[in-house]
Image (cartoon, rainbow over all chains, first blue to last red; front, side, top):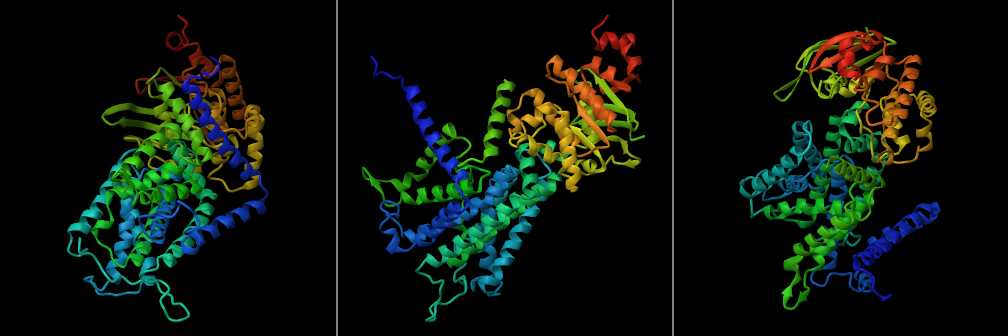
Length: 379
Length: 236
């Protein structure tokens, strides 16, 4: 009789064990001396720089993707990570629900395409590097244009308007002759740079340089975002997310800071779009489905919105998981076809057991508790 | 006059919440605004702090017309509200909440001085300085809201139902603190359902009924007014 344990209790302990384990890791990390943290961080960064080399990843067991070129996959994943870091500013820090974030990515990619490609009507044929800042500026402007009328409103309006915006961009890409629809823009120039022997550094076959470029930019963007969140701007964002009325009563110009968050998020998406166009060499309307916006949002929430590390891990894991299903067959079924089924399942399980995300922000966790209390009080 | 409100009306969609309210607050006073649930007390506060735009009328603060001024700029002018109930930032610690109160200020020495003063006024908050705001009890949250508003060093402190949901002993305590704050030089406009305490502490008071001011006078006058007694003090 002593062997019977009722199941809910057992499940509790398993979840608890996991939770305690994570808490212990976090605790050790926070109490480790500074140099240990720096060394570990450096090791992680070196690992990710080394990752796309076949000499390295062939020893990593099941990690490389069987059905796709692993280096290509890594590039895609890195773009998603960059996007997740950007969206995290909007959703995680300022608490604005943006359902059309991929629209800004499209604006960035198309700006590069239109200004550089020989198949564009403009025939400007500018070099890639020159167009990148223009792409970033244009996405920022589109963010401000979209945000100015909508950020004055509260609640769900923003979600709807951003959803509409992304669809507008997509439909414009599909049907306008200027944006070339399915035919798209070809021969978009690559980023500049040559090896010593004269071969271009950013070529067609090898995706590694592009991955390294995006990885470097991710590091720079993360440093920038981190500094921002530790400043008055970051405090203003958090206060807006936690209680917009109270923030205003403390003298925070809420509209201005919401617009700031929205525009800086958009700028990062524009940068990601420009990188994507520079690597892909070809941009057409099929690159920008609504699903992508949802995936990035899910990645941010999955990782732990409001936490930069959470956004990185979320973006990386989600993009990787989707690609990982490629080329796996189970009982004659290609699992890749069902990737979003698994993805949805993981999200549902996640929201039940850990609604604050994998690596939550300490504050966000407290906010969640507070909101739950409110719900109970409201009943 | 520090605050002068003239003939202010306010609409929530099609519902008129305030029908031409006029009131004044003089420097150094505690003024109370009493009334039943839904009389428009909190709405009046929102109009003053600028969270809701007014339909007609004017609001003057320290001689300046602030009717159309944005809420955050009103804070910079020295008008700060401790919002009703859960107006604190749940994820921020007590200290971070207080720090947000001083958001508009840049004088580090002055902020440190005011922080010491607030922690002195509310020893409870000093004990819980590292705790997340959302995990505090109702009374502690209320104290935090008042303390945070003080951190902006306001000329006029707006308090929306500071005694709401508190145990009788805590109510006594918070009103004592309000008087203390006032004696230290801050003008206070107070919205209360707890008319007994509010009228006893206030220099002057207004009675609000369905969006209109129906009575005004000194606190003592209203405390002994038969109709006020009957309606708000529960004495026949």
